[in-house]
Amino acid sequence: MSQGFLVFAHDNEQIEYGLMALYQAKRIKKFLNKPVSIVMDTLTQTNLTSKHANWRDYFDQVINRDSVATQTKRYGAGDNQLTFHNLDRTDAFHLTPYDETILIDTDIIIQTSNLNKLWNNQEELLVCDKCSTLYGNKEDEFKWVSDQGIKFYWATVCYFKKTQYVEMFFNHCKWVKKNYRWLSYIHELMAGPVRNDYIWSIALHALNHPAPTIPFNLKYSTYSDTILEISNDKIKFLTPNGVCKIADDVHVFNKYQLLEFEGKL
Image (cartoon, rainbow, N blue to C red; front, side, top):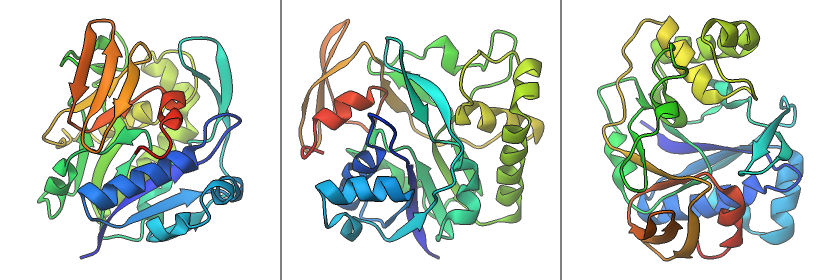
């Protein structure tokens, strides 16, 4: 059976997601030794070619997707509003070229071989609900979608096989996306852009299936954390609690900072 990673990358006015995807693909090759396929639009390809002419060498397949719905999202702690092209993630099942896929965000820095533990899993679908700050705390907003709401699942990392049940899950995610305004009222979601995390959470709840989850914790750094240094297998952060070094895989919220470390990932 074929196995590989799938990433989505659509640049906006300031964030080069294609560049982030390239950094990540390099680290997947290094730590996990698995192929990576990328879904991207023509503009993102053009931007990436202007900086790295050989970027295609790091991807197994390049899947072109120019027609992507656009919304606006606040980046960082201020009021910086940028366009956000992220709503084709629900098409992952039909776009992936692999029998087993790990769908992953481009802002996760790979530093371990942990994700290789998911291959050949007995489960058809594994979603992510185990997450914490760099110091091991889990914030309330990542436990439930709202105060009176359903369980929160991340769309940040997802393992799936090409099965009938998984296809049903992704088809229901598409239905949730189409009816998101009504469902956001039903589930008392916070105002703002459509979140794939909420789409995942609502779809899993609607299928009435306790989703098997990825068996290890994913750490994340918030906008209050500052990257000081990135080495081959460790990241040093300055946090409100002091300096810490992380040797695990890390989901970095601050995309601007990731791009500042071009060539070090």
